[in-house]
Image 1 (cartoon, rainbow, N blue to C red):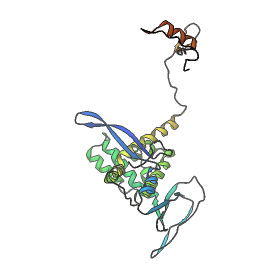
Image 2 (cartoon, rainbow, N blue to C red; image 1 turned 180 degrees about the vertical axis):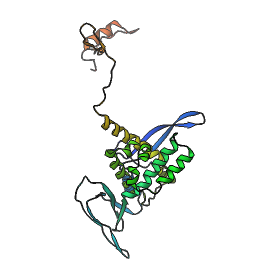
Image 3 (cartoon, rainbow, N blue to C red; image 1 turned 60 degrees about the horizontal axis):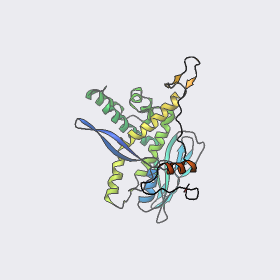
Length: 284
């Protein structure tokens, strides 16, 4: 429908089923969401007057960067001089070439991600049974005006965040992902049908998308953190006398040869006619 490829690498979208409570019973809910390069692809296909989306810039904390300047309708492009490729990303810049030949620069800042993180924390607080309505409201009010770094430095916030946000080694990937999404989604799009627009609008909702991506990144974070620290127990059978592990191998099915096929044909004649299969007649 949106012409995204679920099998693309880097990922463009995902298709999963969720458990959802309806009344007193749980049902399976089908969910589609956009992730990774999916938003970039939608910008290229449905962006208003978009001719080409150039490779985005990741401006890091030690880089030299100047913002674009404006003189009426004339735009002086931004400048960027990288100093390294491992510092914290502070902004993402998307150069977008339009059909009239002009270039538009969509910029998303690191500090904007605090809105995404606050939404994530508040969503987790709503599901947390350790909080009452009063303590939940007090906590939400306390963190409302915190900066992004202050949220990451707050121990209570870290406990509420998913591992994808809380773990330092996966945190920067999440921040970069959110900056890219914020830069791309704000650009106006024009879909060919109302159904396409509705589907896209539903994926803008932070709750289901974050839940899936955070779970994916949290698993990676946990695997990296505990790699080589636990032994996985397997139930095996062994000979008590020799200590040798007993492995039961399944016998491979015997392949029919020309001879066995010929004998089988002779042994099982048809009700009316018996015809011998020769090597010339055998299709294999």
